[in-house]
Length: 155
Image (cartoon, rainbow, N blue to C red; front, top):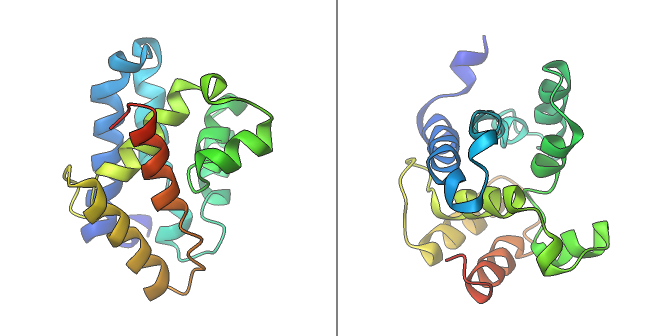
């Protein structure tokens, strides 16, 4: 049963991210999509919960079953890449990155495994340690995302 897979720090983190996205959607001009962003927050790490290397596929499949627009799937697919990679992949500038994507990055970067807002550097170290402990290749994407969010005034 799925509910047994989503326990402890996994449950706390994904619900914390979802709640953060819902609560801060207005600040990003996204008040009309708060509920959808809440669902995106809940699903953003489903594959990681199941310990798959491609942690976005399961989440995207669920959104597809729920008939969510591709826009929301892209937010999840791009959650684990840094803004520089996002800009290259989609051929956009900083100003063209959707606010919903930035909110996803921000929420994921400041909500720790306990579901609480934390110091950004602590969170980056937590993510990097998790990558190493779970056999993921750490390409410093979290650190690059943190730096971009800081440089662009989101943190």
